[in-house]
Image (cartoon, rainbow, N blue to C red; front, top):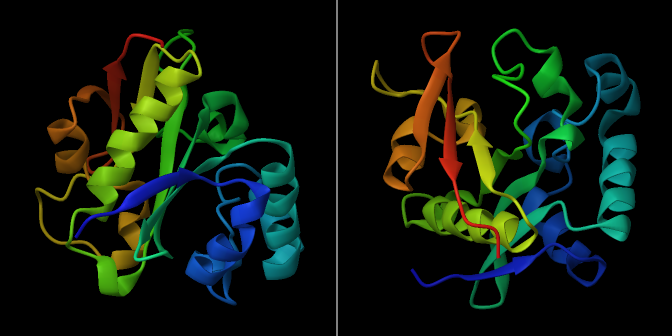
Length: 188
């Protein structure tokens, strides 16, 4: 499968909505899960989280879309770590140190496109996107599947094997299945 990767800009919002569907991907989060406190995420509901993401898209690029034959088939969230407040409030993903980093936090792949390299293409593009914007350190918070398979819903952070294949190295593990992985890059 050949995919075309593009930034999520206001003119691509309809494609993002089509990919996420009426339920907003996972439980109506609209990729706001790591951006908002849980209480606010829940209070917003599907419609409120959709509006919150739309406001972000109107202000800046929060991630990338993968297209096949003109249709969005995948998403990756990539931004400076500071945009993901819940990372720092989590005992598993709180900061390793004070180095500035960009985070790759979420993937959403159309079920028909899974297993065709879309997530890998998005991960590679996310690294380039961050480096083009001055990032020198990029983090991922994937799931380690070496102990066995996981549900599709649990894979939205990506897998440790996928991040390792893309040149990320594990730097810390505070949980058996959730390493923090990093890749140093040269800012463009």
